[in-house]
Image (cartoon, rainbow, N blue to C red; front, side, top):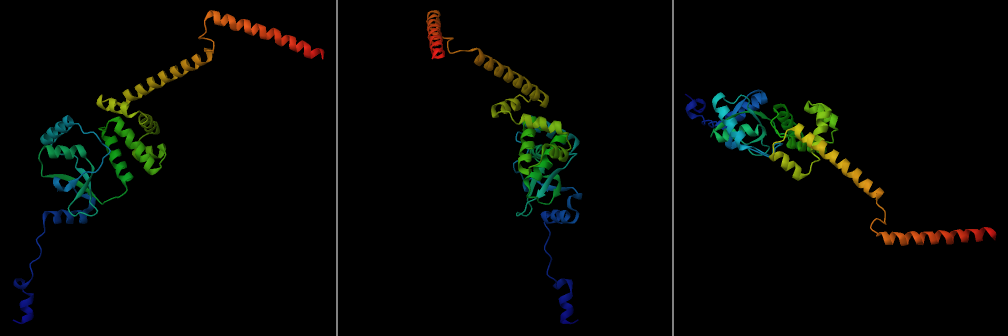
Length: 257
């Protein structure tokens, strides 16, 4: 057996690196893309600001109990981190991720997408998903709709088409977004529905119109002499009459010359 043969023998080959679980997951993702579902450790998933700002603990516990009984029907969606290996950024499924944490799961089924730095497109994905599931409050939806509109420059009609909604619906969210911060907080706390908020806006606008009409009427009917007493008004009348007599005399005199 030659020296060359010894070198080719498996006993003399350098052992290959043992693949970690992260390597296996990464290999599956690189091979199949977002066409497969992979279990990713919860500790490897990070969250960035989402369309949803308010997570209700009661709903998360309720969802967790439901998942515990029936299993997770819909996987969450994440995207690869652009710099950190074995790290993923949550795209869709904040409630489900929180429920998994509540249940002390080690991993969660995920659809993995490539990293997309376009925050507006990512938010459109989140918004479309949340509108489909109807699990976002109207205030958060309205803020997200207008934020995307401002970021992209899309018209309301184009945004409606992208989100699969009619234009009137998007216009309603545009109206809702004009509420003050105090009003928004109130409706979030009250868990107001979209229709309840629109009714509130209609009443507020009607009340505002009445107030404007009342102010206008007051302005028209109010004169600089409203505050004067009867004696002062009588004096003003005499002064006016004296002025008129004098003016008439001056006019006659002017006509004669």
